[in-house]
Image (cartoon, chains in turn yellow, blue):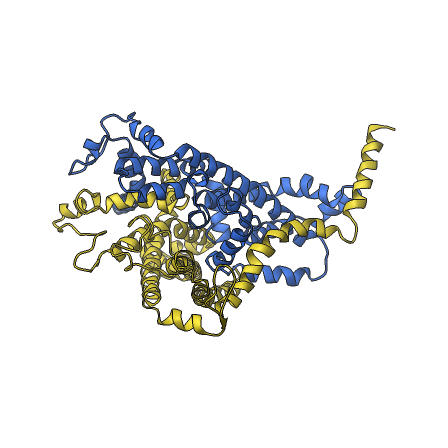
Length: 310
Length: 275
């Protein structure tokens, strides 16, 4: 038997194994194995868990009802976690978006050393928030940090970014917001830049022929054509910002702010409730509430994507 | 002409200031990790370390905590995750793109809907599951729960769908099985997409923090970001040692980014969702 026919025979025999009615199972079983255990089952389970009163790690519980939801919604710290998360989302996302629109527009021109600029602007996207956060923590230091030193140059008195005085920590939130904006910029710039590059250059050529100034071009062409991308980017960022957790961790060695309780975020509260306090039912209820918030924004995103054919 | 020049200068000025702000925390971290205790506590701050080859902080950090172990753990977890998730992504994307089975469209639509469920919502149950399986304190507990990614499968299926059917039929006529066709034809064509997916996966796996924080208790199985956090929380660990350790955590990703920037940026631009 020649080498070629031998090979052909082997192929036919493997065809026999792989081409039966059950062939898709060979692909689907390994694919669904992890998915069933670690995604699909938890989705169903968390809903059930949220209605089980006094649910514990062992699986024991006292009864079915809305108790967990009532406890969570009346919990002082959960309420403040919702407030903090909303403050974070609705400051970080708009500011990061405005700054990113500016930078993306400048990067979309003929620029020398574009590779260096891209590297600089996109770098924070790939690095651990915990690690860079440590650097930021020292930059925010009241006495030796670079930020207060720079502010001192323009005559601003040192700000106690990380500390607390008299049961108040007025600048803690601002610290996390500044860090959050810096963290969000790279991803946002990339999305906006790809949106800008999708605008047909004919629009710009036509406008230039008509003698439009660059500010008119920006207002009349760039902004309207980029609007769907801006909106979509904001929604995607909001969805991820609602899950803020890592951004709080580096500044107070894992505590939620200088007073340990002043900077709870929703995810931080969920993690502490199920992990440290072992109140699994309440944590489940809180994560359903988080999901419903995110769901609203996801549905808006889907709607926009469909409307603009992304 | 003159107005154009002023405009140009203005554009570069804003871009340079912005770029400096973006990279400054890295500069601060790396420069301070090379300084002596005396240098970094000077105020106003010193900009450049006197001896830029002063690696004593790194040596000390390695002595103070088992960073070598953390590093090896991170490497193992990241490469394990990239390979395993890469494999399930390829076979899943192929099955949904090319094979025929009942309920295919419906199942895929359902999976896409599941994408909006945040991992944070699944974490309670997954913690229970790995506790029952006695996977707490191991390396595979950091890999297996993430072995299938609907998002990456969704991206790759999109790419597979764009490969013309004629290629498939001619391969089948030549006697290639589906399995062979997938690995010999489709995977090589999809290489750019696959590289992007694997890079995004490597980044999120390397930087993963919350899950390791929940399921790892002993020092032996800590990964770099979590080991770094534990090191930072320990009372008495010094500023410059923390910065040396933080540098160690970000450096591999910085190097990866410098080499594969285009793949990563294109992937993010196309996917539109964070890793």
